[in-house]
Amino acid sequence: MIKAPKGTRDILPKDSYKWRYVENAARRVCENFGFGEIRTPTFEFTELFARGVGDTTDVVEKQMYTFDDKKGRSITLKPEVTAAVVRAYLEDKLYAEVQPTKLFYISPCYRYENTQAGRYREFFQFGTEVFGAAEPSMDAEVISLAIAFLNELGITELKVGLNSIGCPKCRKEYNERLKEYLRPHYDELCDTCKGRFERNPLRILDCKSPVCQQIAKGAPILLDFICGDCRAHFEKLQNYLTQMKIPFEINTDIVRGLDYYTKTVFEIQSDSIGAKTAICGGGRYDGLVAQLGGEPTCGVGFGLGLDRLILFMENNGIPFQGETGPEIFIASMGEQAELFAQTLVYQLRRSGIRAEKDCCGRSLKAQMKYADKIGAKYTVVFGENELKTGRAALKNMQTGASQEISIGDLENRLKEE
Ligand code: HAM
Image 1 (tube, rainbow, N blue to C red):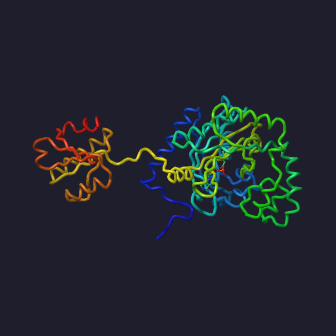
Image 2 (cartoon, rainbow, N blue to C red):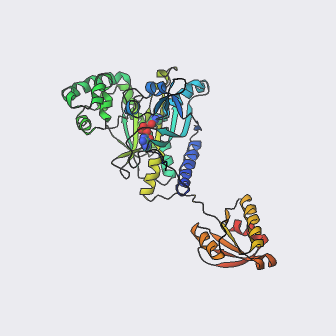
Image 3 (cartoon, rainbow, N blue to C red):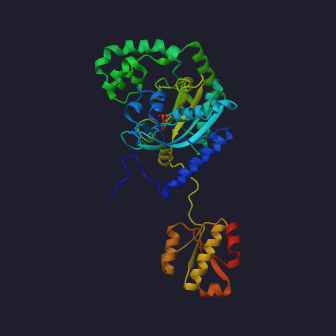
């Protein structure tokens, strides 16, 4: 028996309605915030992520699905979407349109990770990216979009963890101080972090190895080193969030695992999935567009893991709307009645009613059992008698109450109900 590869899974009808519900909410909220949907390819040239995400990040160093295509070009299944959206922003000349460009996406991502609850090798992100707005009000807009989306789903208890990691200017001094702190611990660092020590010491702070994590605990705090501009930006952002009543707390541990961030970084975490799992992460990336070959253009956005969000909702009993059992089940007895039932179900379906009937040759008793199992709201039984009189009993499956109706009225009665 061939199985799905580790870290991938099928989303079955018993769950796919949850995904539809969450995705519809994302689309609705984004529309209200003035964000347009972008869809980018599943694979890109590897160089895009190596340059965009950073070649000392876990994502690029350890987690990418990379292969050569038939012409020997290195291709990677997208491990995240920001770099791909920046590529599209440049390639499709979105910068030539009125700015800012406000985009959102719902997209699969691929990372070769150790799998566990809420951590998959194929997972799905709802994300936003904004280009061309330097003001902290846009950081507030992006964060408030994530919160509005969570609230729309009935999630109110999650808080935004907020930090600023400054700009390349302020990070220069910090990197020196960080290296000073790390130098005596150099031999204890994992091999990957030894390689990061000179090239990108900040990445050591979000290494997953327990020893590196322990060392990182005593490291100097980046927020203490940010320059006047970055500090003013951060303070203004907090002011916006406070005025907008968006709950947040400063968390200086948040440095994010991708290299492109500048100034604002944020995460929304939950501990109901696994130890402090991030549901949403994002921030500002004012250098990325230029790094990928464009004019200097600022950017800000987030990625929200839909697999983790749905798991969080399930674990916390937050209801999903839109489970779609049949509104009516048409049972029948005899060949003529069955023929009639098939036609009637077709008519009802075409007029927007979720109608169902048996196509497996069940007895009447078994048809009723089946109707109950698939959650039909109403049933009606057709036999020779009903066909002759043109009247039948419409039964409410929840209350058991039954009322006689004329067959011609069925569609209207169902619509009224
Ligand atoms: P990220 O923090 O790497 O950021 O991923 C965003 C979210 O994707 C995470 O918070 C998590 O919910 C989900 N996620 C990540 N890896 C997995 C996994 N293996 N299984 C399930 N869910 C996962 C980014 O990707 C940035 N591009 C976000 C961003 C957009 N920043 C600015 N704009």
